[in-house]
Length: 518
Image 1: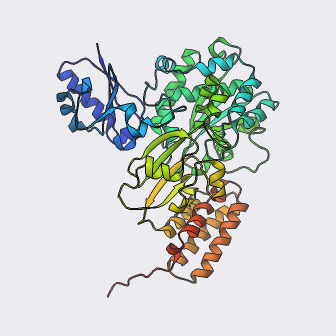
Image 2: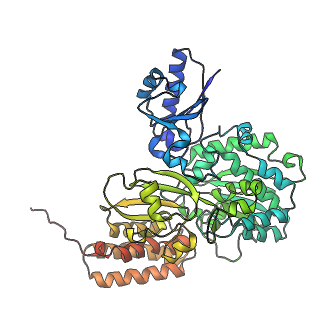
Image 3: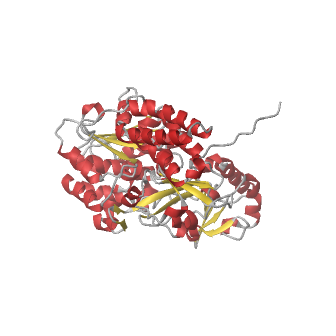
């Protein structure tokens, strides 16, 4: 009987040599005349252990990592195919502390199944939600998603069911489902992990959304910087169509739904839904004024649901297990689970899915293990490059949309980037303004001009030019951008700037620059 060996094909694992490791295992097995089948799965999300090689044993899957090509011969010598001891051994994968304490709903199959095997997907609970949706009236599907409490996981946190209901009630000959997969925030990778590790859950979620809203066509707008995700999603769509999961009669029903993969061109602003829609239509990616909302006039001026990858990928389990099951996780108005993406200067970086409610301190110190350098944590940025910086004094803040808003922060796409005490927060504030200046679409003045002026003001503070006056100017500038910008790019840039200024005022003092001797 062939021994199953799992080597991730996820981009993160590929970046540290997973392809070479898989090839080396295949060569060594052939050399020793051992019957080994290598399955290229998604990642389990423990980035510091990649490439994480798993072996299926009678007692469960046993993990070894991080594995290099140079380790392969010794793995065979020490009997890793039977799950025996090796210095890289991590024990049973699901008993690794980082993984064991998670609540995996959306990511239940990620890293477990073959991403491009529908049979594997179905054997692990896939398609149950779609089959139930086909048997339900569309309005009941919308009601189920609404009652679950699912909110947009792309950053805004808008109730998904309300968005679906608006599109479902709109009258039009054609409606669309658009998946925003333009994951551009620093420290975020949940969308990519799902698309590379469990693509059928996204396809299933989009098909359910189509049935619920009367939409027969879907698009995944995927960033060009994700070639592996594009390849996996493109192949998965073909397989799903051949299987009857997509097409004029979804699984033989009266519902039609098909979809395409579209690639963006690298503009950060196209993560904003109306810029994305312009780009999808072949236009320049600039923000549209709202109203009209995309739910009324979106893609090609037709009613369109625009949802994030994780939002759509969370739908199948809600339809399968019911609204109450999903709603029982979380706190307040933040229901279900959230995939925390822990990155930066941290010991244990990766994806950790859990119910809303853990404190920031529990996440950074407990799950992340503190800084990789061993130095004290100085700041944590939550929500991507436009998220606020939280000092240790705010580490008791629970991971909840309203709690973060109350602390002048935002959850965003749940990216968490850790900085140690060597970080210069004035330079971080300047970076936020510079990032906005580079990525602005130029549609509105507060963002287009304000970000450029923000960089100039930060430089004047850095060089001690009337610091009190410049700080007052920076504060006023942030206020103008926050309330005057057309979209979140300009509107959220003040969050990192003002949080840095508020919580780390000592870093905004004039600097002394040494002058080189002639």
